[in-house]
Every structure is written in C-alpha cells, then in structure tokens.
Length: 353
Image 1 (cartoon, one colour):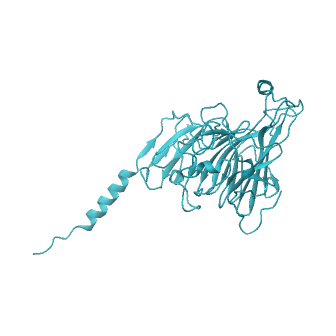
Image 2 (tube, helix red, strand yellow):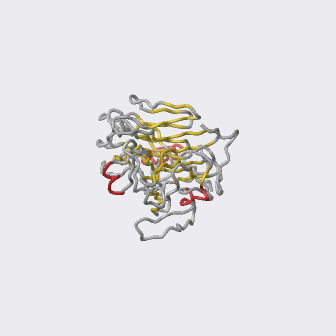
C-alpha cells in the first residue's frame, strides 16, 4: 500500500497563517498611573549581561498617524510578535518638549502592556534611597541607615558592579548622632567610574541645575534640548525634567532615576535639623532597578536582593534602623574596598577622581 504524501505548500501556508495570528495589535488605554517602578523588586536576572530582558526586546516601528510610538515585541513569551502602541495620554517613551509629562513604558514581557508613568524616582518603591536616608530594599522592607557625616559607604557591591554613597550631615548640640543625607554616588564597573552628585548651594532655586555628572574624572554637560542626553557606548544619562532630574542607564547592569532636592525651611523646622542658613543641604533621592545581580550581592541595599534574605530590622516601629556601618564603610567615595565588598575592577584599578 502506498503512503499518501502531504502537500508541502499546504504546510507552508498553515505556518504563515499561524505566525500572522500572533502579530496582534495591542493598544493601551493609558490609565496606568505608576511612577517607574515595576511590580518586581527591581532586579532582572539574565545570564548574559549583553542581552536585554524580555520587557526590553522590541523594535521601534514608525509612529501612528497620531504620533503614538509603536513597538514590535521580539522576546519569547506571551508578547512575542505583538505590536504595542503608546496611548494618546503618553505618546512618546521620552517626551522632549515637556519632560514633566508622563512617558510611555513598553513592556514586552508576559505583562505585554504599555503604561503611562512619570520618569522620576519613586521614594516608596523597591530599590529607593531617599530622605535622611530611608531605603526600601529588594525585599520590600523599609529601613533607615544613618551612616555618618562625611563618610562613604558601599550600598551595592557585586562581582561586576559597585556603588558607593557619600553622606553629608549635621549634628545639633543636643543630638547623639548625625542627621545624614546622600550627597553623591560613585558607580563603578569594568574600569569606569560614573559620579552623580548634588552641588552645594546656599539658597535653593528650582530653575537652577545643582546636578553634577562626572565620567572617569571629567565633568560632562547634559544638554537641555534635543534628546537632552549624554551617552557613551555603555552609559546613557538623560534629563527627565528641565533641571535636577536624570535617568541613568548602565547597559546590562542598572537603571536609576535620580533627583537633587533641598531641605526646605519647613522640613528643617519640623525635624529640628538646625541647618545653617547658608546651606540648602542639596542631596540625592534615587530609585534603582538592577540587572544581573548575583546571589551573593552585598552592600547596604544590595544585600536585600539576595535570595532568601531576611531583614534584621525591627518591624512595626516608626524608624527601623539597619546597622552595618562597620561592614560597608569604604575609605573614600571611589574605593571598592570594605569588609564585605565583592567588586574587583576589570583591566585596571578604578582611579580616584
């Protein structure tokens, strides 16, 4: 008996129809009111640092007739081969004419959605570091880490990434410890050092930029118009407002939203900081989203991203305090050395700038 031969042209036609059905157009309704923090804890693990996460795997298509940006998803999963369209409320991923508008966040992961979110740090979100200093860890637990005035501490130390924070502060005569804030960050990876700092200003003005950016020792200027960004092959720093707000992306390692903020007169009075009249105590408020952290990551904030981590801070109190100053203190803002630090610079020592 002869076996019946299948028609190869029919199989090809079936495959084309199957793929076509996957290319579904998804249009968001624009009712997302988030502020840049995903539901996860801000760490996307990926075995290859050069690969994008599923959420980021897409090609930009030409905008719609109304100017809404479109993305063709390429990451494997529920969103594979689907086209996402930014809603009318936030038609662009990076608004240029008015950076105070919400941006369009494209997520080609299993969420398969686009949402409108402010592109600024959310001090109540995972991976945030704000105020005097208050952290929210990768485990979602809030805690304070006081550090010390004029000292530097490792907030993240991993195999391929190290972040130090420089603390400023004051201690009124009646206090037994310093009031502290983070004035500068030093982000070290490979043999590079990126510094983000708040300039010292005597009187605060929202229209004056108090943000300082240095790359490998050289001060860089972030343009205020056009793309309003500065970039290298691995780093992008883009303005998210006219002054004092940026988003920093280090390829394959992290994304963070940073703003410079002052201590206002009312805040000074309420907390009895007793700050001098000629210093606004400009400091940084930030939120981190990490990629590819290892399971042994260290640092004041980094440790909270370890699998199975259990926070030692006391719950249910107004001000849960995290210790560890002795474990994470570094000799300077630019040193990756501390008792528990893990980072070893590639190729050459990280220079002190």
